[in-house]
Amino acid sequence: MEMEAQLRSLRNIVETQIEQKKNSDKINKEVFQKKGTRHFYIEKENKLSWYSAADKCRQLGGHLATIRNEREIDRVFSGVQPGSYWVDIYSLGGDEGPYVSSLSGKEVKYLKWGIDLTKYNSNHCVNVRVYGREMYTANCTEKLFFVCQAK
Image 1: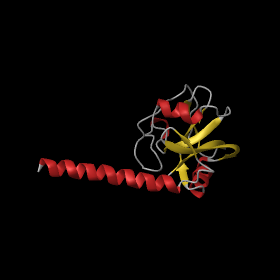
Image 2 (image 1 turned 90 degrees about the vertical axis):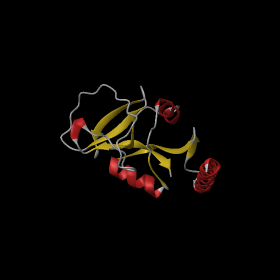
Image 3 (image 1 turned 135 degrees about the vertical axis):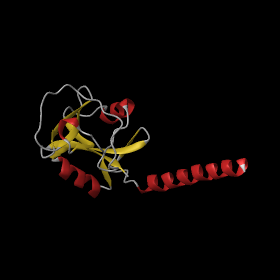
Image 4 (image 1 turned 30 degrees about the vertical axis):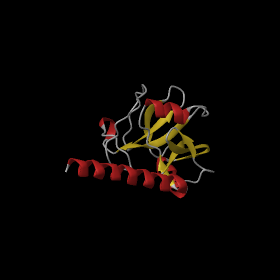
């Protein structure tokens, strides 16, 4: 029984790797660039609201980027022109959050807040400022650059 369980586990790992390879082959590499283990597109010319940025990412075959950790925030924003960039985090609960991913609907695990005393009376969407690579909230209708991630 123990060997069957190990075999089942190995099959799951192989199937997952095959699925990841298939998905990787579908990525439009003219739009998305590999940074670390995932592919990203950084919009540096046109500023959009968080909602319009999310829609544009879907049109490109992805979604707003979910930043997982410190190493990834450094990789994604390395060499990027100064500015603020929308990512896939928002809160409908005001300043107290919770802050969630629109893709999963789950509370995000990685947040790197910068110091900002601005309070908003409406929805809060999160952006990363290149300088300092820290996260800030802004009104979701504000127009900023954005980062997409391939599916």
